[in-house]
Length: 151
Image 1 (tube, rainbow, N blue to C red):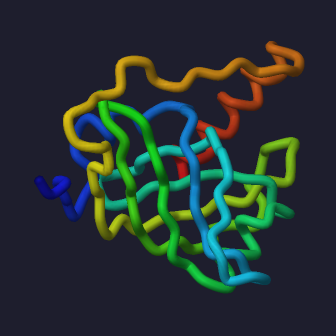
Image 2 (cartoon, rainbow, N blue to C red; image 1 turned 180 degrees about the vertical axis):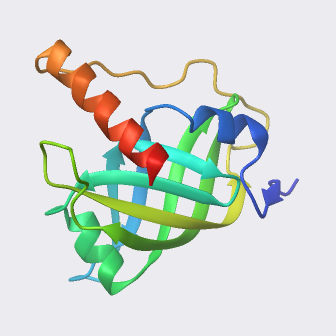
């Protein structure tokens, strides 16, 4: 049985990408040409065709995207695992009003593929805790999410 493929974000994924959450991002490494996978949490779906995310502007992710803009976001949601492929572009090297040096990146969604293996479903989605000052983390998360929503 072939996995389902869509050209845009399906509603359950769009809804899940309205808040901070754990995803992995695959890029093409600018030095080796091989895959590079990173975990990120500041991600937001602007609409069914556009995802934006924020990362440290010194991140290897930025260097990789500048060399090869093909990316894949992997998200575990809706009782499954999805691969969201697209073209990334740097929107801003520094998000104004944020105390960290964060870059803003946009992804033009090209394909959404359900990649869960046959006959199974996810019963527990990944969760994480912030390991630094919780009040500072919550304030920073709010600032970054608001900046992404305005971008």
